[in-house]
Image 1 (cartoon, rainbow, N blue to C red):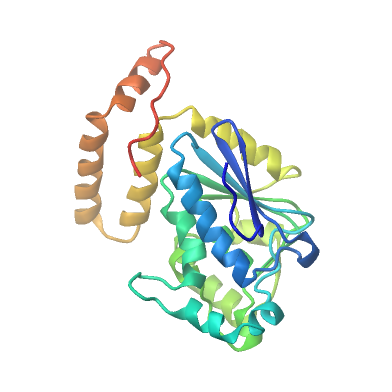
Image 2 (image 1 turned 60 degrees about the vertical axis):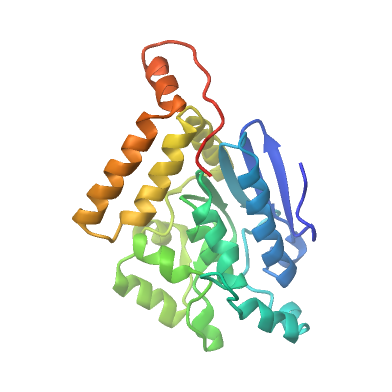
Length: 268
């Protein structure tokens, strides 16, 4: 499989399960401008391969991500400024490197250990599920530098955390441990071996129709705050769309005990 250009992110496939790894372990996987580009490119590579059914997003070494690498980014002020420009998209480059994981039509599972700070939190929150090791230290760090939360955090955080807790995390920049993160809803589960848990969930999801998973993810993101009228309309539209698809027929056959294989997902 083709790899992102700067080697700050590495993709490894294990059957229909892709492992996307932040690959700057000597910097605790701090996010450089090159890594931002690699994250966006990695999501595009995964999206193009319809044989991939699930993504495990992880960090090399002992930490998931220690936040933005400010010293590195500051050496390229013109490039940094370009990354803030939206051009024709809804999001700038900093936001896009997170939003691409929300937008993927397959489940994304983040494995968190060690540091998950600043930009690392925003990347992790863009995943659909987050399995954390007990040594996790998580913090929304922007307030420490006199900034507001960015990189799409305000899209993902409200889906998981009440506003008062989100404000406290964002305004204080105080770190929380894994148990506190679980209590706040920032992680899905705290477990001794989060990599094994992520693989097990990925394998379970791969047993389901890829089209149903894709549209379930889209439906939740599109309707979570939209109210009953639009939720019911989108629910009906997606259900009708799935019922016309081949993978719905395969799912029905499998439920009846027949050994049928799903076809590559139609939803892009």
